[in-house]
Amino acid sequence: MNVAGLIQILATLSWIAFFGLIVIAVVQASRGRGIKGATPFVLVFLVLAIILTVIGAGLVFINPQERGVVISAVQPQGYRPMALTPGLHWIIPFVEQVVRYPISKQTYTMSVAPLEGQVQGDDSIAARTSDGQEIFVDASVLYAIDPKQVVQIHITWQNRYTDELVRPSARGIVRDAVSQYGVEEVVTTKRDEMEKAITDAMTEKFAENGLILYDFILRNITFSPEYAASVEQKQIAEQQAKQAAFVVEQRRQEAQQAVETAKGQAESVKIKAQGEADARLIQADAEAKALQMIADALAGNTDLLTYQYILKLAPGIQVMLVPNNAPYLLPLPTLEPTPTPEAGSQPAPH
Image (cartoon, rainbow, N blue to C red):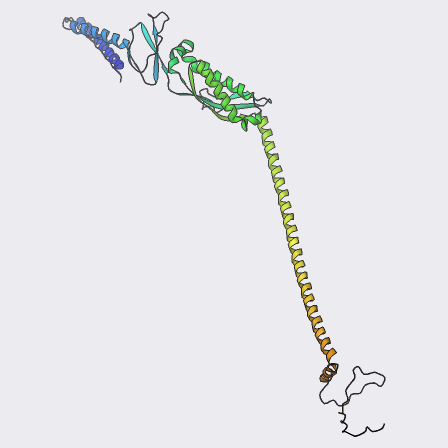
């Protein structure tokens, strides 16, 4: 509790004691008893109450989050030019009075939610974009009174600065900023730019009127029911188009995969056929070489073929009959060995 408050309490108690003694004195007098002994106490409490009341009226304690504007009947302009800073101050009792103003941060919210903002019900900001679409903006303004401009605030606005400066200025600046952008820009690519434009304009406007803007918060943007329905339909169409494109891409990939599979199978068949052809060539080459070797062997020894033919015949065959009109397939050797003529003998005549 500050000193000024304590003195005011003591002054109040003194007045209570004074009037209490008065009542007691009246009661005593009505009963025919003397009141001479109570008179000094009544006077003491009267003087004490008056002194404490005067002192209490002259002492003012300003809290750290406040500034005090002194309204004075002895000043030519009717007020002190400097506001009272935090601490204990003396003013002229009953001639001057102090109007307190908060310098701490304050928040003013305008929202579609009925119980969220300073105004009950839907207090969102209705604005129209450059392409004619109506949108609704929820916003909060964080601000404070400039401690150096408290006296000017009192002269210009008094305690009406919230309802007559902060609220209409914020709503007007938001509407002006929204009108510079299309509806798609407001909710997507240009939202940050628009919010910065609002903040800059509001900072300048508040500074001209003794306020400090700490932050502007663009909380939410909603659309009219008609536009919201059209946006929903557009999103549905875009999703369907994306789904169709996805299906087309999937079918293309499947077709590409089938082509690659067919190419792989064809390549496999080609490689297999090439392998078989190479194998046949190798086999034919081997057979040709074998035949060449046989031909070379026969060319050097013509009786080798006859010998091989004889080996294929059953063992023990001494005579073989063939048709008299069929030539021999091969020149057969004489089955009976021809005796070797002796030296000096002559062949017998036929």
